[in-house]
Amino acid sequence: MSTSAATGDLDAWRSLPALQQPEWDDPDEIRAVAAELANQPPLVFAGECDQLKAQLADVARGEAFVLQGGDCAETFDGSNADAVKNKLKTLLQMAVVLTYAASVPVVKIGRMAGQFAKPRSKPAEVRGGVELPAYRGDAVNGFAFDAESRRNDPHRLLKAYHCSAVTLNLCRAFTKGGYADLRQVHAWNRDFVQQSPAGRRYEQLAAEIDRALTFMKACGANPDEFHGVEFYSSHEALLLEYERALTRIDHLSGLPYDVSAHFLWIGERTRQLDGAHVEFLRHIRNPIGVKLGPATSADDALALINRLNPEREPGRLTFITRMGAGRIREALPPLIEKVHQSGAPVAWICDPMHGNTFEAPSGHKTRRLDDVLDEVAGFFEVHQALGTHPGGIHIEFTGDDVTECVGGGQGLAEGDLHQRYETACDPRLNRGQSLDLAFMVAELYRKSA
Ligand SMILES: O=C[C@H](O)[C@H](O)COP(=O)(O)O
Ligand SMILES: C=C(OP(=O)(O)O)C(=O)O
Image (cartoon, rainbow, N blue to C red):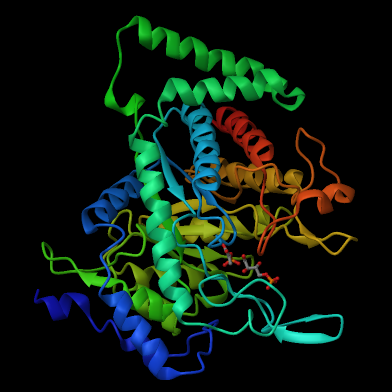
């Protein structure tokens, strides 16, 4: 196959409807920014994307589990060492618990190092009678509610690229430089279990992991995998000018890869079969995901497979379902059944966040940890009933002690939300709630085994 036949038309999306794209005031300015981005070094390499694809193929076969998570919206201010370290630490802690419980490798994917753009329900926001454009993520405009900040500024795309580079560099250093040592990470979990009243109920599981580690040490096992982990980056491929500018032809294979992240997904609002996002992502060779909400039909899912993975390449396509706790048990089975019957290799991941958002009386957008957990429980139940593999979870969390979601071992109530509500978009689980979730999912995993 010639390169041009293999790559198809990477610009065909330009003639199709592209939802959720910012309008830029000056076409010359965005063209200049895109040209500058196209000149920047890649953030990830094609070989790394292929490696992740192979691991996602394992997930589709039931031989691995995905833990994907991070901020709803990363911010430029949040691209600092402490915030990144705390997030990574929490992700690693969750991964150890899940690895033990699932007894399969856990593929660790950050919603990090590129998650700077947001689709919005409404194009404008009104506060105190003043209407301004909605905040669309730091890659597009500013969070502050004033006209200058809310102006779309294409130079922010360059800053998003640089913040992604800084974040990914930190993640690579932390995960390869000893910070991710298995015994160290388990010691942090031990602290959580011992020091927080919330964590004590997980004493038994933590003690089992202790014994397993002691046993391995006694056997003399000390593989490289104990000292460092593979970490992958991901974000929603929302801003097509940005993603296109960071798409390169891999010199080894002659195929196009979007080098802005290892894994890209298409959101629930932009997954139209004849839309620009599906058209663009069908040409890149990264592993990709599509979010599926409760209105998705089995035929929609099959059509997406035919469009995005016509060759049925294992690991290429992941469906990230976000049905809501009240809907998952009826909405998910028809999708899985038909896809399974088709024989297409798909990894199924549960996003238990986006179908469970509501507004508290204080006006804060929030989520109940109980709903999040119920959706994950429904996900496991459905897969168990159908004999298919619950392939992973996709969550919005932070390593800090924010007060954005209610419930969990710390007993956060709606009245507490104002205390530390810091998200730039949707509510995230805090550190304790994330660890709660990991231990609870571990219990579910073991029950379903
Ligand atoms: O993260 C997902 C969406 O961007 C978010 O839920 C949209 O929020 P909105 O309904 O406040 O626009
Ligand atoms: C917008 C998001 O989700 P969804 O497309 O599922 O609404 C998201 O994950 O940030």
